[in-house]
Length: 228
Image 1 (cartoon, rainbow, N blue to C red):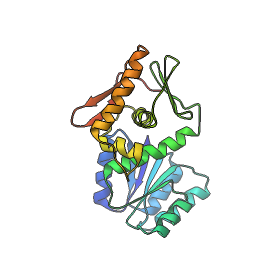
Image 2 (cartoon, rainbow, N blue to C red; image 1 turned 135 degrees about the horizontal axis):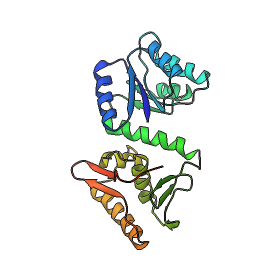
Image 3 (tube, rainbow, N blue to C red; image 1 turned 90 degrees about the vertical axis):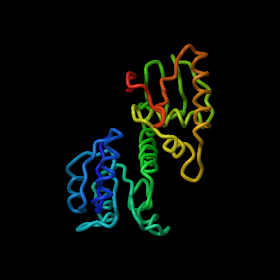
């Protein structure tokens, strides 16, 4: 996934570039609104992470400009402006999400995955296949060897989070934010209990769930698995 990061704070920008790159994202970055607008126009990105207070061209003007050109790239605004009217302006200008500074890196990662999921669900052809597994993002269903696996809502969302993240390690906080949002939480034991339940359901069908626990870090799909 290719991301354009437009953030005028050099310290925050460097920190996000390192963090997102370590998760496997490809990052272009700038601290200038005018340069950012030019990059957004001339290159193709899956995401733009956009600060509002930028030199030369502010974030809202930049966002409105690319939307007028028909560019439907996913945009997450990062801003210290926390008033409801600021959020409303950002979303009505074309942002897909609005994250108030300061924020945790794990929450930003979860927001990226959540917004990416919205885009994937629009196309029912974008099922995720992993060996004999198929995750149907439109129907919210998991199949193994063309056999339906009956999952609870939270079991499905945990599996969806990990399938969408491919080989990236997802922390407990990443998964919790994805499943229940930032206003609630799932403990490590609860997540492991849900995964244990899914493993048993898959085992009954003769399969093995390709999700592993990297001790001290989180959960991931085995790298030997190939996702389409």
